[in-house]
Length: 278
Image (cartoon, rainbow, N blue to C red; front, side, top):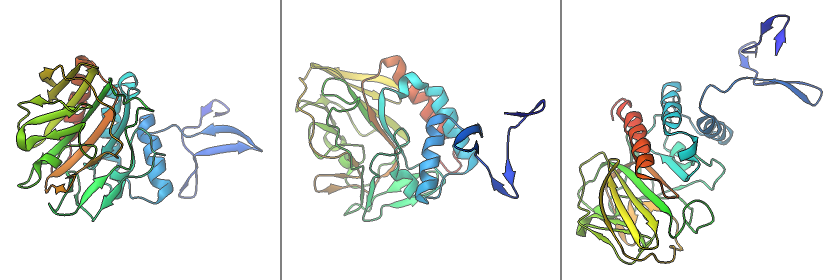
């Protein structure tokens, strides 16, 4: 919108920000979003819920992360949950890619540390994302990816430190070096990685599941897929095993190509590496 030859880029009444201007019921102007569309929608939801949002610096970094990943890849994903940000513990309960999803639950109050993540107590606390990966979105029985970033693995419950559904067939089981991706069969040799590692389980077809570590392919096997879990996604708990790890980012969606995983991983690593205290 212009007044004469001058374009309106911002509008305030006193110190109050005006985001939209109407004539009657017709909108004639809207303040341009400061952030990537996914980040702006997430920020709007946090604001509507009264949840303390991350700083402008972190929101800008998240926008860069999303821009670097690109809409083509993000459209294949169903969820990204961000414990590693400087806003609040509750901000991690809202899905960056679909903010109107049911909020995650911080069961028994895992400890949140700004720019690092949530830490379980090893006995009762965990995050329940309250979403069942039932095949109605991008995550399918024969086309799926899931993964997480764990800042530190702690000393107990390491098989619960990476994202899982409540039991097989979706599970990083580090204590005995197994990875299940929509299967009762597993990829062997998936040993406990280093702290701050980014782990990915990938189902590329009915007879193929892959393990990626920090964006790089590690191993594959041909175990057949099984019906999807009927339980919700969660982290820091697997069955009756709880973890005292520190989880930073958790995500899932439809399968990605190796190149897309590399792009996704590079953007995650860049975002995390720029966080103070990471």
